[in-house]
Length: 603
Figure 1 (cartoon, rainbow, N blue to C red):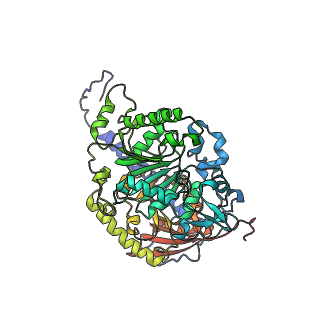
Figure 2 (figure 1 turned 45 degrees about the horizontal axis):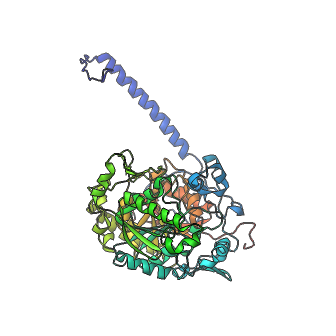
Figure 3 (figure 1 turned 45 degrees about the vertical axis):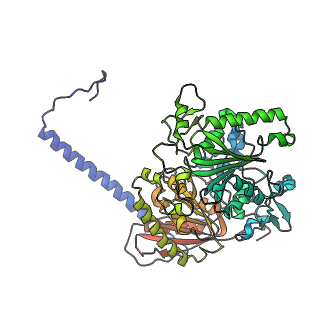
C-alpha cells in the first residue's frame, strides 16, 4: 500500500477467520442467484416480444436454434425534398452555430440524438441510375447532380459543361487550361516515380470535380479527392457521380481521418489553402499524412509568381515574399525541393532521420511533437503546431523502401507488427480467406465484377482483404476502419489501398447516393453495444445509390433483425449461406429500390 509519504509499507497478514468467510460465501451465492434471476427474466421478456415477419424474400432455412434478436418491423417515412443532398455531419443548415475562424463550420459537427433524422433521403426529381464506368468519367446525368452554379462560375476554365441532359467533363482546371492529361504528363516528367509503380496512393486537397484523380486512375495511382461540403459547388458529389474516389473534408482545426505516413503523394492545384498562415499548421498536417520520401506537389500561387502575379490580384513583391515564406517553412519541416517547372513545384518529404533530430533543439519552430499524442490518432483529434516525426525503427515504410505496385499489395507491410496478432502469416491467411469469399459473393451477386458496380465501401475492414480480392475488377474500394477498432489502416495504405477512419455511430462524410455496393463483415456484432442498428442502416440507405447493393455478413443472431429493418428501407433482400454454409453466420444480399419523393414529377 502506498502511504502519503510516497513509500510502500507492508502490512502484517491478518489471521483468516472461518466464520466470516463462510458467511461471505453464502451472501455472494445468494446475490449471484438474485442477479441471475434478473437476467433470465429480462431475457424472457425480450424473447417474449412479438416478432413481425421480415421481407418475404428472406428465407428461413432449417438450422440449429439460436437466440435471435427480436425486433418489430418498421416503416420509415420519406424526408422532404429539400433533404435530397442531406449530409448530417456537414449540414449547411447548422453552419451558423459554429465559428468561421479557420473555416471551423465546414468541419464535422454531427447532430445530437434528439435531432437525428429517421426518414429516407429522396433522390432529385428526374434521377436516373448513373452512367457506367468508364464512360462516367467524362459525363453524368444533369438531374443526378442538378447544380449549374459551378458550370457558370468555372465555364472559362473548362471544369465541366452542360449539354442537353448531361454534364460533360472536358478535363480542364484552373491550373491546367490545356487539359488534365497534359498537366499530369508534365508532372510525371518531374516525378519519374509516378511512372514505375513507386507512387501508388495520393490525396488531392481542394479537388474541384476530381479531374486530376480521375486521370491518375489510368496511370495506376489511386487518389483520395478531398473537398469540403459546399452550398453550391458539390465538388465531392460530382467526383463520386463520375466514379472517382472522394470524401468530404477540410484541413481546419482537426486532423484528417487518415493515419500518419500514408500517402505517397499530396497535391494542391490552386486550392487556396493559406499554407504559411497560423504557423504553417495546415502544411504540418500534410507532412503528417505524407509518407517519408513522399512528394508534395503545388501549382498555383505563389509558384511561378514571376509570370503569374498579375492574375492573382496582388503585387510581385507580395508573391515573392509568400514564396520565400513557403520555402522556409517547408525546409524547417524537413522537405526539400525536388523539381520545378512552369506552374508546378515539387517537394519531397525527407526520410533522413538527421534532419528530424535537429527539431529537438531548443527554440526551433516548428518543434518535434512529443509522445503525448499518437501519430495515427485522427478522429476528432486537434491539429498541433509541431512536426510528427517518422519513427526511426520503421525503416521499410519510406516510399523508396516499399515494393512497387502491384507487388506491394501482396507483401506484408512493416507496420503490420504494430497490430495485435498482426504478422506476415496473418495477412496471407486473411487474403486467402477473402479470395474464397469474393468468389462466393460473385455467385450470389453477379453484378459484382461488372461495370454495374463501381464505387465500393468495405465498412469495417481489417487489412483490406476484400478490396485486394477484387482489385482486378473495374471498381475502387473505400476501406473503413472503426475509430474504436485496432489500428490497421496503416497496413491498408502500405499495401497501396485507400481508406479512412470512421465511427459508425455517426454519419459518413459523403453525399447521398454515392456508393454502388456497401459491404460489411460483422459490423453489428462488433458495434451493436455502441451504435443503434436502426441508425446505421438508415445511414447505409442514405449513401447507397438507388438500385445499389448491400452485402451484409453477420451472425445469425442479427440477420433477421437486419432484414426486418431493411424491409422498412424499401430494400429487397434474400438470405444466403456463407461459402462454408455454417449455421452461426449468414449473408444478407440486398438491393435498394429506386423511388421518388411524393412531390416529385418523376413518380
